Every structure is written in structure tokens, then in C-alpha cells.
Length: 385
Image 1 (cartoon, rainbow, N blue to C red):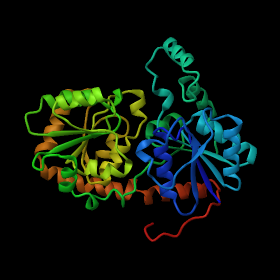
Image 2: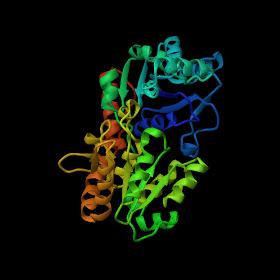
Image 3: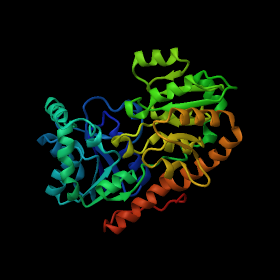
Image 4: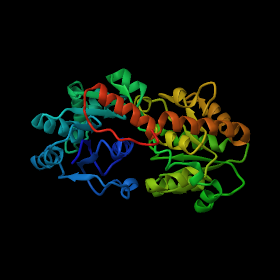
């Protein structure tokens, strides 16, 4: 028996991550099942996570077989919770929800239709027409946004998404018990990754897409006047990995989510040098919350919610202007050289993770929202809440 079905656009890609965090935060009661179509094997970073998601028939999410399977899974459920405004999540959930008279909610963790926002209209139409066989193509993404007002309620991961679409802000938090610095001692983490024990380490984690600013970070690293080892984790491209190693970086390829604590725990601080683009402004970097849970200060560019998440009178890191190479170099050198400042920021980072971004805080927000919206789903009695 399931109370909430989280519908994911593609189990083979990173949309699975956010749904799994919501399911984990709510876990126990209400009873949550994650399901969705899949373009291939389960997304490798989360392939070993439990509970395993339920795969719906593929390749097209709106086929009768996919709708029929989701309909059977959702019978008796109180809510269908779609993740991303995509045909395989929102489109499928709305079709099944109407047939079963089950309300549909939606969570947005990115402005996916904004990925090509800076591309000319003619090029966007051309790209969209070439991508018609892709159910997550640009034309489908823009079309699905028209259905957002049809949901019972909307949650979003960032202030920019909230300004654009409305809804309630719910960060896709992190399991602070699992990502506990005491469970990932730095000496052991560095030994596992072959990192020097006596040199400050900065970590860049995640898929190195253009908007994430890895090239800007490498340019800044070449200008440093102090010792600092760069760890780049999550690179799947062999050519890029070779170029990074040639530049002096330690490179770790794709890794399981269960290993994230060791990868981040090896560092002294995290670096998120995002470029100021429409897509980046609407995004919440998940690795920022992982870093905070592991008591890592973060050097981040001033994009999106960076100041709210990292800045303040007791900061959890440094916020520097986006597109300013000098400021990025200065930030790297500051955190590399000032261990006392890092230690103070580390305490604040962990505090924010536990009290603002952890699963308990996330669960409280979601349960209050469900109650406000009139959903009589069971609630768990937990000692840690």
C-alpha cells in the first residue's frame, strides 16, 4: 500500500536524485514509492540506493502501458507527486491522476526549459524539431510548463523558481546522519583517494557542464600563489579527465552516491564557481548541501540563492562575484591559507545543514504543507523530529 507516489521523468538520469531525497525525508509514514519510465539502466550514482524505484514501461512515458502500470501502482494512494515539468513525470501523473481522481503535486528543482533560454528563437525551434524523439526535448519542456497551474500544489527548490512559477520553497535536503563528518574522517578520506595529507584540498564535485564554471576554476588555479590541491569528482569524459590531470588536479570519475561522503570529506572546502546564466540562477546545487552537512565551507559565485545559503553575519563560506577571475583567485587563496576562518565557517555550515536543510527540517515543511492542503496522509512519530 502506498500513500504518495513520486513520479520521476527518467530513472536513468539525475531527476531521480531529488525524488529520492523527498522519499527519504518523508520515509516511514506516509509510505512513499518512487516510480517512473527509464531510458536505460538506473542512474548509476543511485543504483545501489534503497528502496529501489519502480520502473514503468518505456520508451515513451505516455504510452498506454506506462499509464496502466502507474495506475495500478497508484490505486489507493493519496497523492501523485511529479518531479520536473516533463512528459514522463507531470504529463504522466496528470493523466493517471485525473482517471483515478487522485490529486497531483509538482516539485521543480530546475528551470529545465531555461537551459536553452539564451539561444535564438530560430535555433531553439530547430533544436526542438531535431529532438522530437526525446520526451525531454525543448519543445516538450516548454509545452509542459503550461500545465503547471493544473497541479494541486507546487514546491520549488530556489527563490528564482518561486518568483517565476510561485509555490512553496522546499530545498531538496540531505540526510545529515548519513553525511556526518564524524563518519568520514579527513585523514581516512584522503588516504582512500590518494591525496596528500598536508596540503589544503578544494573539491569540485558534479557533472562539469558549462554553467558550472570548471574552466573558470582551472584558470584561477593556475594563478594561485599558495599551495592548494584541486580534487575534481564526477568526470566521466576521458579526454577532460586527462586534461585536468595534466593541469595538476586529482580526478575521480563517476561515483556512487554512497561514496559522496568520502569524496567531499577529503577536502578542506568545496568550490561551486557557477557562471551567471538563466539555468544556473534557478538551480540549487545539491553538492552545496552535501558539503554543508560534512562541515565544509563553500566558495561559491554569487548566482541564484548563494548569499542566502552561504552568506550572512556568520557565513558558511565565501560568496564572490560571478565572472570575476580575480575574486575567484582571492577566495581560493583566502580559504587555502586561513584554517581558523575555515573552522568557524565549518561549524556554521554543519549547523545550517542540520537545522535548515536536513531531512527532519524538510519533513516538517512537507508535512505542514500536506496538512495545509488537506491531505490526510499518515504521519510518523519519530524521536528525531
